[in-house]
Amino acid sequence: MKNMAMKNLAIVKMLGIIFFALSCGGAWAANPLQQELLKNIKQNAQEKITGKPAITREEEIAIGRQIAGNLLGAAPLVKDAKLQKYINQVGRWIADQSERPDLAWHFGVIEASDVNAFAAPGGYIFVTRGLYQTLRSEAELAGVLGHEIGHVIRQHHLKILQQSKLLDLGSQHLVKKVGGNEKVQGLIGSGAEIASRALDKDAEYEADRIAVVLSARAGYDAFGLPAVLQQLGHVAKDEGNVTLLFKTHPHPDDRLDKLGSIMDERFDKVRGKTLEKRLYRIAK
Amino acid sequence: MNTTKIYLTRRIFLRGIFLLAVSLFSGLLYAAESGTVLKADDIRREPFRDAKSVTTLAVGDAVSIIKQDGGWLQISKGKSRGWVRMLSIRRGDVRKGGTNAKGVLALTSGRAGTGKVVATTGIRGLTTEELKQAQFNEDEVKLAESYASSKVAAAQYAAQGKLVARRVDYLGVAK
Image (tube, rainbow over the protein chains, first blue to last red):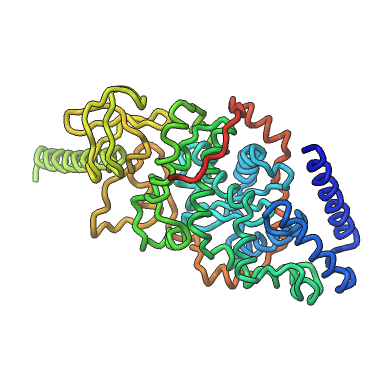
């Protein structure tokens, strides 16, 4: 056992050195051949150890930042500094209950009337004004942010990018172009299109389960997300403000049903704060 | 027309408006408190799994929601009153055909007392096409990043709200 652990530690250490070398030497600027070789070694080793997409934290953040910037290009932040600081304080606290407190988490409310929320790799999370204004307590906000944090920590979007071959690490994509944005943009398709793409249904259900757990860990009432889903459940699919949400997520009733069958007993006695009064209200 | 007549007419008119307002308001209140049964479940005397069942609810039953306590809702249906698991109920009426309420407006219009007015004009929606065409906005990302909270600041803010972190294991996949 100890031997195994030592061996793993050695592998992890070696990986660490490779990562470090890569990030120091400028992964983007290195000799293409050398870079590709390192990438492949790293990818294989990392996938074997973690079973997760082979990608460094820096790459993850670079991809997420590009998607975030594109999304903000389509819908800028609501110009209310207090609101933005508030959502960052709440979001960071919840994210810190996850296994990725190391990420530089960013949260924001964006100017869009749609009811929706977006997550990009590396910890960029945005809630639309439309969704934010339906919330009635900080626990509900926690539920929504917890769902998006769930996508980030389980790297759901990265998996989609890899499946769709857009993100083909170790291939031509990374070495072909020059200039920060362009290069990363080449990996994620067009604009913030990735944000409008549906994830696997199971990924959504998984994010829901993570949301209630992270909410509870953070001391909130675990039923914040279910309460939001209850509200969404009676909006028709064809109503403009929820078109994208319904296109990209299972129906709220199905999500409630899945949560219901698993939360029932575990959360009966878990009580937490709802903090209705502390929820920051956007001025009209 | 003499003054008494004008006065009476005005009084009747005002009363009409008042009644109209009352009926509208109570209609809204009712809408805010109503729910629909999503999953067959028992109404129980107390908000506990093993509390005595008062009666059973069938899918689609309309109920009135009185209040919430954690994962439980106190509801009434006809003469029966008691507690039911929150996740067995969907807030709001079953959607009827022909309602004109749109999107967010439909979500919030029924909530009495929140004082929320949701703008439906002036703010753009986000379509798939718009997201596809979106151009990277460096200034806006920098602005977003400038609002980041540190771990310490977030923990302090949580403590102000008396939020206490606790251990909860992740949930497995539902059977």
